[in-house]
Length: 529
Image (tube, rainbow, N blue to C red; front, top):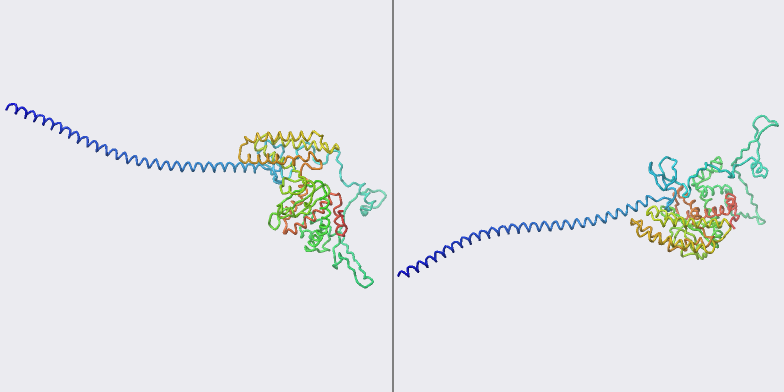
């Protein structure tokens, strides 16, 4: 019994021990559950915080993406603005020396602004800069203004007057000042007087009793050839409006004529028709010319942009009114049809459809080369400009010496040097800065390379001029007309002006007297054979 009691007690002790251990484990478990619960709470809080942070990161990512897109857009806009700034700088730096702008656009720079490449002295005190209308190639010299030593003057001398009186050119009239005696000195006063003369033309009946009235006397009163010539000169040479012509004619005749604007227009219209007859002879002479210079300038007609084109050589000038410069309009010009000579022009590709040869004007490339040198500071464009001028100078000296061509080896040597300069340009163009500078330089290089034969044709044929300046000078009269009147009202009026100008400029070119030639034309006599 003692054993049993000890066994039970041992079991009981074990049970108590187990229960104590179990109780401890339960307590520990409860504490672990509390800790797990606490940790779960912390995890849930962190998950919420992570979720918030994820949303923040996502929002920031979207913001960064938007900023990157905005940055890319701003970079693109900035590049466009920089390119446009470069373009505007190029435009602002344009003048008549480095572009096709007229000399009238060259205004003096603001006070204190000095161009390091400009050696011109601005006498107006407005800083350095070329005054408007100063010739491109003119440089200041130390010579005094006026006629230089050795220059033959054109002053009307006493001997000239007395010879003209003797020849009957001057009417002689004597005026006495003071009391007559054998002692006196002489002074001459050349002058002119306007005397209105009415010539009465008597037309007699023929044997049949009919009157054969010449066409020029179809009206009872017809203005004579001299007054019509004065009107024609004022309209064409003077670029005077019809109302001012009336005012002038009536004024110098002391209102004896009382001419109307309609009469002025009728006289000019009839003069244009007479010039149109002479125009055929001018065109025929030009058609057989081995070389023709041609250019076009824009004119305003009825508020629209139109053009006047001219064709010139040493003896004739022809002006043509054109609504556009397109090939379809050029094909309507009779002179160009069947022309077998060389056309000298300023890189008008439409003209390459006519003639058997083409020469490019070299003055315009000189301006573009100067512009390229100013904008890029590359050496090749300066070398090419000097080289072109040097070849022209060498050619002039040969012509003055009576030669009609270069020595046999010279053209090949010049062409090789031309190619060397272009090769230098290709190399330097690789490092040119600025989008527009690169574009314009590439265009210039391509033009000089592609049209090399046309630019250097003056080396091989001395009849071909170095530049197209002859045509450009001939077109200045049209620009004066544009500035004075503002343009034309119709294409018919512009065509009438072109006919008259063709006649007058050809008369000048052939050394004929303008007034007398117009008188002869009004009297029905041919002037230009």
